[in-house]
Image (cartoon, rainbow, N blue to C red; front, side):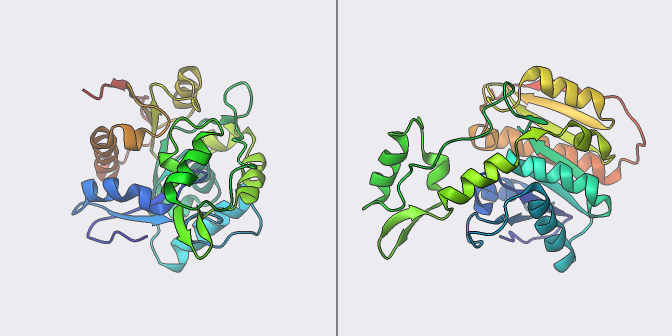
Length: 265
């Protein structure tokens, strides 16, 4: 989804089970200053289901997308799994990435840091209504299905999700691991955003990520969970824009980490 408008390009990458349109509020907040282009990654949103679901495949898709539309070098913003794709892209294709924003994603995508796989294997393929689909998801241990319902649409045979649950199981398992070396290997300026109540990225790991990678700013959004862009959209957009503004003119080759706590009040 291309939100268009003037300004440098920001490639936005959603997480597992998401789609590009979740970045509409951010695009609106950055309008007139930055052009947000949000990719429906393979198996998600309006992209095709099936195929190969590996870190290499996701990174290749993003690189080819930037090249095909002549969008590089771009700032790359990724949430959750999209953050992992973002920092792998920055390492493997540095010429395509001028700055990096990682929103609530760890480099230790494994136990005990986090639970890297959400079991969606028993989620219904179709339900008679959107409300019934919501209830079915929440009955399987999801307190609030709102994030997943961004991918709910009405098909000829009922309501279902745009992603295939079997694809998502394969994809989640393929991205388990310790990606610390890939994180520290890139050199672009980076902003690491952590939700204060995150279940994906611990405070200890976030501080280590910022400490071990030069030119990385760490900001924690107090009172926010994993979906921090939705929990505090104005604060999220403000931090992203402030960082992007700095990197447009900042030619630092090395600088200390700016580790700050941000409240949502």
